[in-house]
Length: 287
Image (tube, rainbow, N blue to C red; front, side, top):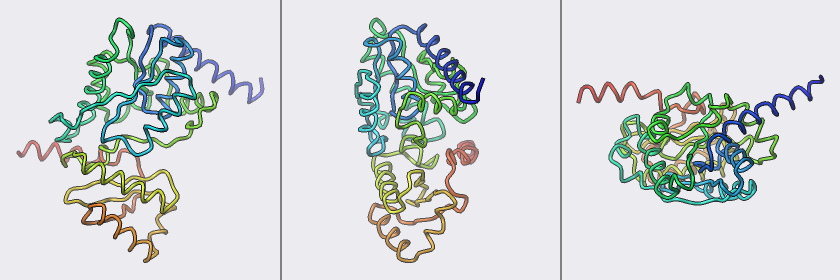
């Protein structure tokens, strides 16, 4: 068997494993962000259940600009019925407090809304796009999934992020190599209250930087005292040596609402906010 045949055989095996698990679920609603994970799940669910499948995207202030429109486009490409649901996580005290378990309250709100809108008699199963790699990180949203009996077909089928991207590419999904795009609230430092104003500030700052630098993978972290901490890949850091660029950036960020603008010399790294969780827990114990 040639190398290409081995690759194809591996993809076929993973695809079949995913189909077999989805087939056990019955008609299914996919919590659909439009990212590569939920897109692969939606593609599999639609393949198995056709008109008895549905992709639902949550709309709230924490959704970055352009993400809803892209989710709609990907759902249309897959051919799955798509619904937009409004969630109100910003009204939940535990979510606002942002003490390390924010995602639990967010996902609980989402799954509660989905079950209310799409009753079990019509859709016995709600599923998400969590994959095996998500099990090794701080993921309070997985606890919410367990509490609401939400299935994770990628985990059930034993698929990690690399497997997911391979399947997405096999299915010609244009977002197969899309960088992870967590909600905007994940940019707010733990212990700093999450508000629509703060996430909007982050959204505008990231949109400006992506346009100015012509890169997709970056973060603007909202620290305490209205401080912006910029994370970009190491190869992009030299761009900030240009005085004109720095002045324009600082002026724009202050116009958006930040008082201080800093550059993280470690560069972009997903989940960097989780490094502060221990500090938040220590402060809570003191209080």
